[in-house]
Amino acid sequence: MVPVRTDQRATTTLWRPTGPKELDLVRRLDWRAWPPRLPEQPIFYPVLNEDYAVKIARDWNVKHDGAGYVTRFEVESDFLRRYPVQQAGGETILELWVPAEELDEFNAHIVGRIELVHEFH
Image (cartoon, rainbow, N blue to C red; front, side, top):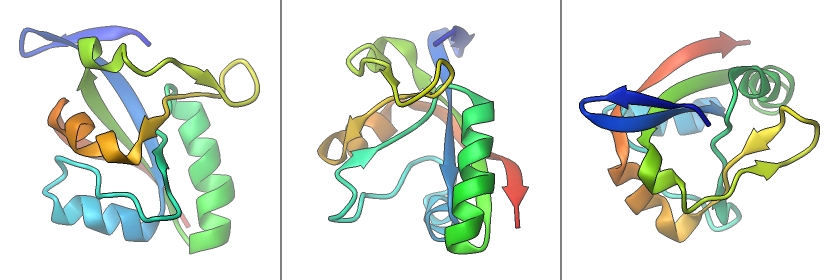
């Protein structure tokens, strides 16, 4: 994770591959927060690199949801230190595992808006 300075706070850029339903909920939250997890989703998984997010959105979300999207957002770096980087496969398959019950606090540390950066159909 490479910190970036934004509004005098060091932030880290994260990406989130998502399907159309979750993206619609983010839109309803004015692009400022992630919606609560469903009961079968105990973990929120933001990823640490754009290529990995693109692969998931393009190869998994499109197949299962008909569309896949990649979002980018900044989170306060100091806050993220509580979540160890998880290597979910190869060297570049890196993600954070945020327990669902901590998502409101995670959202409170997002700096700026969540941006839509890629779309696949």
